Length: 169
Image 1: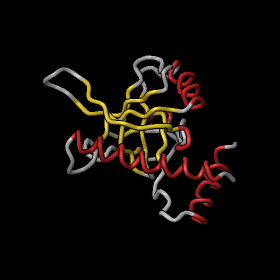
Image 2: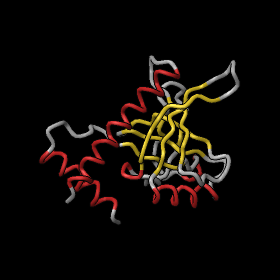
Image 3: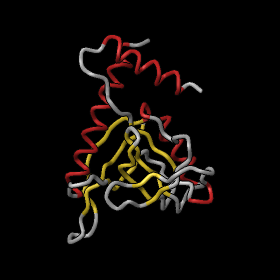
């Protein structure tokens, strides 16, 4: 497993020589397993506002270093417009999600930052373009405010990871 040493190295690099603080939290994407796929004794994660219970696999399907970009997009009928966090994946992440999504139609991807579930994306077709659209929630914030706040958190994390990659091992 190459990703675990990469993350440990990234965090160590950030802590050792970074003038700005390292990201306090890393974003990862997990796949929903449903109650039948949950490990015994494992509690579901819950979205902060709707409190929808989501059973997720114990291992993420996309680690933080696979997230290449983030923005907020608006979609939906004119009277029902919603804001979504669009995450763009790197090449490896795009391949991973394309393979996974083929067999996961009907399930959801769950966006977790740190230990908090902040967003959900239903898989309704294979995802081949490397773009994920998450509906996000934050207590006390509107849909738009939650989307922009979440995107800002992810943007800072991506910038810190890219800075650490530029410095090298």
